[in-house]
Length: 182
Image 1 (cartoon, one colour):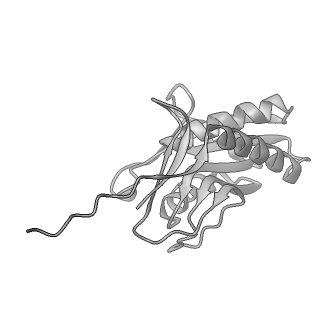
Image 2: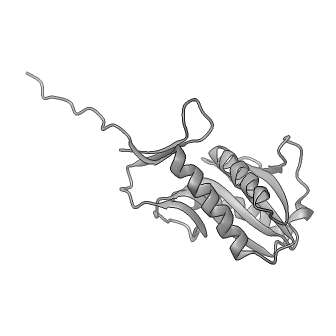
Image 3: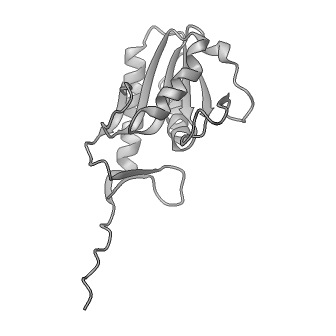
């Protein structure tokens, strides 16, 4: 008789669609409160689910009457960022004019902050544009730093074990959700 095998635990819902929407609204308002005197905002998404989150934050910023707001996507290989070229593109995939970031408030957006590596490489790519201020925004902060990166705008902070995985689903199919998977 063989020993029973453990089936993987069902994922735990951290954020459902309604809570994600409230997080987006709260984050947008927090950004505007922190930078009420800014004349230009740039929302720079890390490619992937960060792009969807950044689009929603940008839309919310514009709805609450933000200053001049631009959006771009930092395209990179998250697993090997130094082995592949990074690029910054606009919503249509055309090269983004980095001079727009000069003296602007730049908010870098990703879905999950785990070790900080992806965000650090993304920041290194935009710093030569000489922004006035750079902030980091994430939907879920796992608080597992290996690199000195801290999020300024967070939807949900969550201390997990290192083996757990956070899966953020913002672009369908199905409803928006952030799941904790062991």
